[in-house]
Length: 104
Image (tube, rainbow, N blue to C red; front, side, top):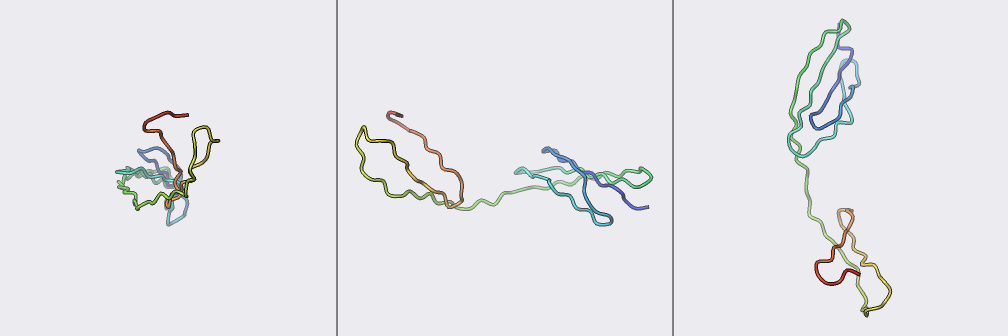
């Protein structure tokens, strides 16, 4: 008899059941940067189990990012607040921090 069920679990969190009959596919395995140990257990119709582990090392691809600011008009103390309007070429959110001076 063949394999009837395949389960997986990750040392980085998460587990699930693969789908298939002769070829099995697992989805929803989220990898963290660095080594990820995946444990796979195959079960046949008689309840026999076989377990194997594999280590997947995930290295995220990092690409250059450009942050672009629109032009900022001259302002005087007391003017209404205004936005800086920066955008990231990577589509990431922009956050601002005051390094020195008043924060109001």
